Length: 521
Image 1 (cartoon, helix red, strand yellow):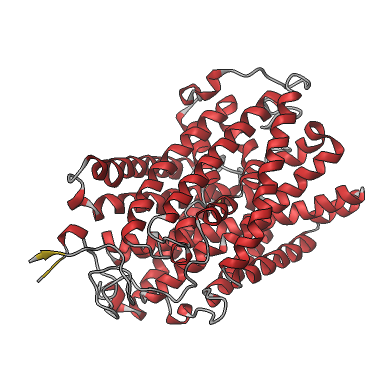
Image 2 (cartoon, rainbow, N blue to C red):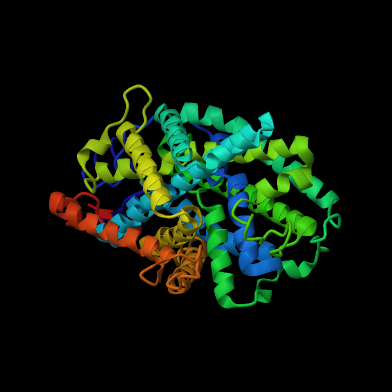
């Protein structure tokens, strides 16, 4: 008996333990290989996170939860993301599969847990796509009003019918670009990501220069970096959930692994680069904004409930002036639009992988012969996003706030499972070296435990209608209803697929295994 090298090899399957065509292995999907390099992959990861969009959507909400400790919470949210990124990197080295969390958790824990993990990723992506489209729509009309100097044009966003139609048009445009493949995606993103980062730098510089100029300005204090200064644990976990949302999307670097040069190593490096850029941007912007206008709930304060869900719309003029302020509107629109396009990457490729392994209908395995993209999966994701946003907008006026809070729970759900999957999958290798113990065991386990704690506390807190927008369904917080209802929906769909595809759920298509235990004669 000899040990088998389980790292990716050439052939119809990715893992070397399988002969070409062996249905027990990790399969290729027909995507366009070598379409993007390290820099392009990192740019796509940053774009998916959409730093300017995240900041305008959550700076106010986070300040409202934790006050001046917002920078500390940004750092606290970065830590579990970094630890989970190590898990993604290690799993991607041996299984560079576009199904990422789905494929890896099936390999570690079996079909049912893997299916639900894949569902968590898919539904989290649909939620954030809908929010991205909504923010892009709002800033489209706000920018049009600023450019024309006509308030009635900006007010068109308040017309629900106009808002929904514009939103659907933006979703359609983003779907069309994503449909055309990674090359088209990469070309659009370079300009939009550079624009975002440059405008953020200008905002930070001007905000620092105006610190002390407003009634709500506050002096910088190192205590802002102390997470233990948050008034309550409930406030800390609420802020942490929002902070985790602000980093979500870096794993798009992994979802494009089969289309990346050096698919086993490049995506992990790109993800780490993206996360460093993000945490630096968030800390600089958060500190500068607090010094300029404070984190209170009055006037220009970040936590003012009248402006907290769209901070940059309120700060553009006072901080940057009437001319440069328009650039901030452009940056938010570019951020949301760019992320709207790249966020189709993980959902479409996860659906492609799930269908390839018979966990979803076979029709989703279709890859465009020219563009080498999962065409049907991309289009269906676009349609689902449009339907979800339209329904939620018509049902609730607080859809943006509540779905963002629900999104934090979904992110903790599938990131946490993936982190534990890394530990369990590599369990036989953990004591081969200190590096294996740290990066395949201890660090992913710590990240998973942190996310599990946030998941549990958030689930408990969101039962209260005061959590999120304050709306309720039969006395239960609407955030709880949205989050838990979507997980239950996933479980129901899994049972339906179990009847349609029993082979996958019997573990006959994608099998559990541990690398060091795989042997051959």
